[in-house]
Length: 405
Image (cartoon, rainbow, N blue to C red; front, side, top):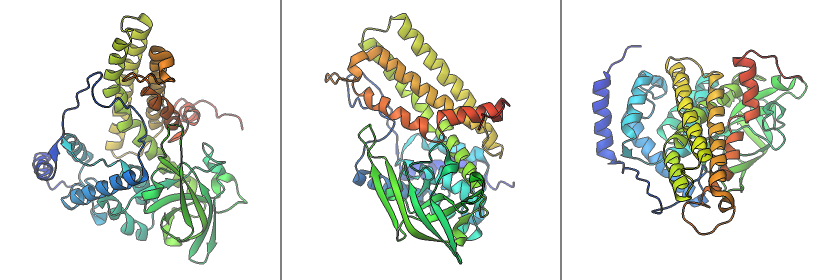
């Protein structure tokens, strides 16, 4: 790879862009009893607030893309700059010091769908969607899980029937984040019901605004509605929007799932446990008068050590990705480490708070943890359940025999 700009030149260019378009980020200072005590894994926002956040994310993405920072490592033919991953890391470290709109609404599109289109999409799809995704012109969602096919993705029943140069899709998907503000979706369908279940699947890019697509919100036990169920009633998809070969959808799905585990396990969700939440947990123990309790101190120390080990594991996984290798089973380890650490947080706050976790006394910083506790099961399901990931690690990392059918 011929690099046309040095890292120092790139840094100057990036800093100039950020300073001209964003304000420096305010230092986060946590003090017990001041400000909001809300702590949650999933945002509890209205549909209007989510749509506004998505528009803000897209506006910043267009600004960054047009300045050359939208897809730093991507192929030039699709709008990227073809720079090494170290340049992306440099830009991210600089951007972290500035107050820019949250890019969370674009996370699934960039972290899971775009890499799958790049790997398996037709030239028509790559040209039409990759630049648009990275520029923020459109947002994408992932349409995998179904009411009767969650962890066992190969059992899905949404069907795709070929009709000339089109496919007609009918069925239902569930737990789809961001479907209500997405423009396209990556969907896996059953294209051949007469073959072994893993071999009868095909992937597509579906227009979320097409006739026959209906999105309904799902209320989760935290009180929010971050997810959706999506219904498809004879939705037509052009064959040039197919991902991979006909009946080759399992390979397409694995590409997406590996990138999903990378986004969840190595991404920002893990940092919360090691940083701000650790401070809150220590202050919580002090406030409850349990900071000298040996069991409480041991639990906190164990959580701190576990998060540091997870950080090191994540760095190994990132090194592999940065070396140009595909995401592998070690990302299952990263994602499982994250959910295990989140569960340790749940156990810690349960030990310290007792009944205050389930009965709101109005005391600052106590019952607020209940929303966090109720959100953890969601992450233990997203990106492959803990049980599925343990099988992946056992079989592909440790070389253990497969689970009996």
